[in-house]
Image (cartoon, rainbow, N blue to C red; front, side, top):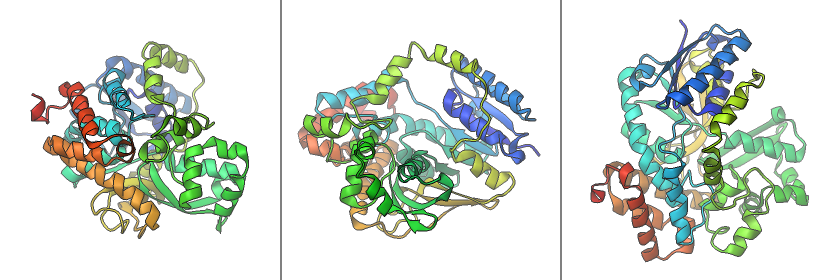
Length: 441
């Protein structure tokens, strides 16, 4: 029987387009029913047109359904993809602008720290509502989340709905692996690695080219100033910690105490890199604000371009194919709760580890302990995220304050009293989005 694959937040044009393209490249999934759900009818219409173009270009037997009704979309789904954004740039700009008033300079703000935590507070209630519907309407579905903040959302979903088969996906692992391969001149298909940690701060515990340790080659490549300049922050972390970290210079500069606490350090490490996200202030926010007036024109332009049918590098389609397609085993890095996976990170926190899929489902792989210096850094963020999730679900502002107090960048810049003042201001700015916090009523 054809499978039903549901997209929650299908109006995320680029994500949905790429995921649909990937899914239909697998013969076992080519006749799937693709159910596109979004709360914005205009965006839904745009992505429906693009999916129709992909199906026509590939001559696939797939069918398309479109709805703004989440329950209708989820009913009897075999696979669910979540790519939502709770509120637009006019909402999450306060995540960036308020910390900056206090000297906490944020680059992206979608993962952790004060900005990531407040994004989580707004998004967790919606994600739990989605899980509640999944538990009722498609309890056996494979659920793949692409929405940030990845770790906190996945931790909340699995904590409140342990029977929902959800994992979180991020392209930073395979993206960084390909970047490192390019640096050493290795074909991607000759690289293998073991990567584990937490989302956006996982580590290549092993990185091999044709079975041989490639770290010496990476160190040698880094002597080339052009290579070093591509990722200032991550390369400095590699030099000093001994292992390479996932995600860009800009992202990682937010998660640690070493690069954004002084203007001179920001200039040195976070503005001169040549990678896709060097680390300047409000990088993603500015991009979204610029697109507010032009996103329709951009999509219309995309709809006039030739359709691309070649499979990309996202994990989702291969996971679906493995579990309810042709059964081919597949290994990827996913975000799951830490029950016997990484020995020296908190029990039950959200970790990013290798996961093996087959027709029997998804099985996370035991990694063991991280090197001590990596575990220290991951532990700080993982424990802050645990506090933030508890505070979000319980509506406890004290736990949110404590989670922000121990954030590495915030604590490097602010006093405790200043942090409390900043958090209070962020609560006030988000009042209409946080009904679970009774102190705001």
